[in-house]
Amino acid sequence: MTAPAAHSAAITEAGPFERLLALVAEDLALVNALIAERMASEHAPRIPEISAHLIEAGGKRLRPILTLAASRLCDYTGADQIKLAATVEFIHTATLLHDDVVDQSAKRRGRATANILWDNKSSVLVGDYLFARAFQLMVETGSLEVLAILSNASAVIAEGEVLQLTTARDLTTDKARYDQVIRGKTAALFAAATEVGGVIAGADAARLTALRTFGDGLGMAFQLTDDLLDYGGSSAALGKNTGDDFREGKVTLPVILAFGRADDEARAFWRRTIGRGKQQPGDLEQAMAYLRQTDALAGTQAAARGHADRALAALAGFKAGAMRTALEDIAEFVVARTV
Image (cartoon, rainbow, N blue to C red; front, side):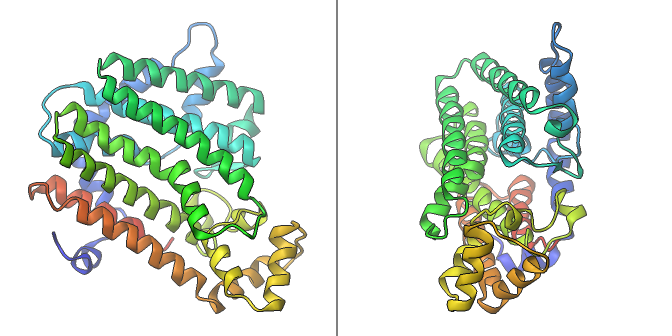
């Protein structure tokens, strides 16, 4: 496996995604066509309107691309990866629609959210519709193992979202509990997306475990980096407002580390702004100062780095080639993002 430093030095912002996309571009075009076909509704035109608003909003399709890449990494020559990649995208889109309602979000991928443009009821119901479409697609592959993996991931995602609700404004939340949250809300679908690509290719148990480990490590690193960027990324790049997590009282790893290392004055600040939600002008800037003083941002970055390294190690057993290199580069890029 190429050393992480060598990968990092060679990466440009868009390069890794472009290289991976080029390897699965033909399959992804078929996935997009299938998504358009299956999100249609003869009787409820609002369904494709809302679905298209989010699906066509400029997301990188990373999760379905991982399914396509994993199947090719395992030398799959069939066509079921198309249905599975569309399934993964439908599950992801459904969770985003529900999340925006729960979080009362106004912006997603740089655009107004569906719950703002339409309403909460429509967003929830269209999300439900996409979940149903996802299950129809996964059943069509005829694989009970695929059905078990993706249905379990859907349950874990929902559990992670509920767990996040219980940790909101709870400053007693520790790193282990927060890892549970992000493994549920983010890493579970990454892991399932890569694993099912191996399942349809007939990969052995060791390779399936490696693919799942890769997806889990990548997903954890992805979410931890997002948590970090919320306190220092560009609003335009993030597709949301910088500091949203702080304003919403989310207890993410930067806050957990800062609170654990804080003096009495800083703890009082966190209890007021996060614990009780009493925020005033200048609080976000003060929060960022405390995060820097306690090395909480560096600690979060180190945690993301550790998960990326675990993802990279999981690929070592696969044959060297363009696909493995592209996946390694994605793992490096996830933690190299600065905006």
